[in-house]
Image (cartoon, rainbow, N blue to C red; front, side, top):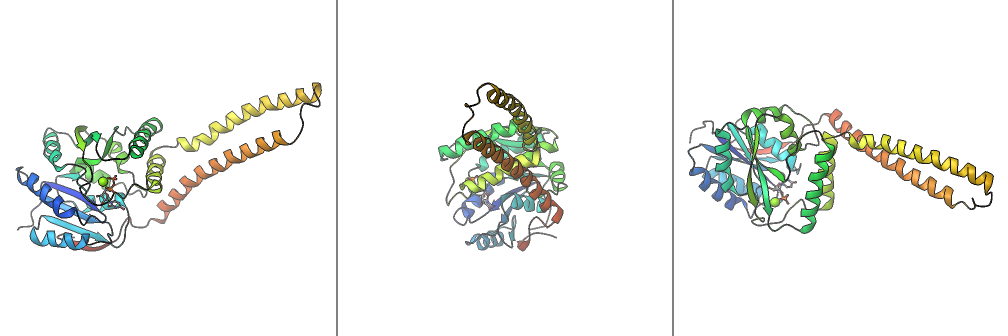
Length: 315
Ligand code: UDP
Ligand code: MG
């Protein structure tokens, strides 16, 4: 096998995906071999605790078009994808989940759109099988919220399953931000973007890693803080609203004091006002903290990921 540059790179982040990797390779290679394009499958092991790394090594030994790298620990999905983009050789790059929730059968459709001249072809979910109603509802709310408060046009109901032209990949690689939110970064880049619809399949095997509320919350916070100042401005709006309410309240208190001196009894009113204001102030402070922490992350300038092993990757 020669070390020529493939036309298409397929990147799949892998975190404890031992039961799905052989099937992933089988499905991808069957589909890609049916196209006229040369391809490579780049598996990024995000510090798995199971045999994922060994399986990547085996797949690579048996087919050199399978390449891989392994992180020194679990860095997270966004970082794994970033490493994939950094090491992809293709003229176009396809991002897909390793668990076969993004059906590989859609990839030829994406390639066809790319040939038509589109730089980004994202997969739009037509329906989602095998997801909990909680995930469906929160995902829907999340997309609507993001749409309202950010200036980048993040397409509705799209995940990370997408094809990107080399110039989009190079643009993304020039964006060195930490706390990455790829679904916002890709539309931010621009160029010609389009979508193809697909039905999101249930996971082939194994367990979803994003089900914990904490993880989804962090994901949402990164999305919002990366592309919007609206939460920071919230404190200002709240301040104005509170000032207006206080104006009315002060007037009411004065009138009550003058004309109905016995109406204003007890400390309940004071207590409610103090507690409410305390809550508003703490929330505002927390929002500032979210941004501050992210600025701190940027300033430290640490690498986004550290590589332990590689298979078939030229340096
Ligand atoms: N993943 C990863 N690092 C992590 C968590 C997940 O690389 O810390 C990978 C995982 O192996 C899978 C993809 O990201 O290929 C999506 O994860 P999952 O299927 O758990 O998420 P969901 O489909 O529920 O959004
Ligand atoms: Mg999944």
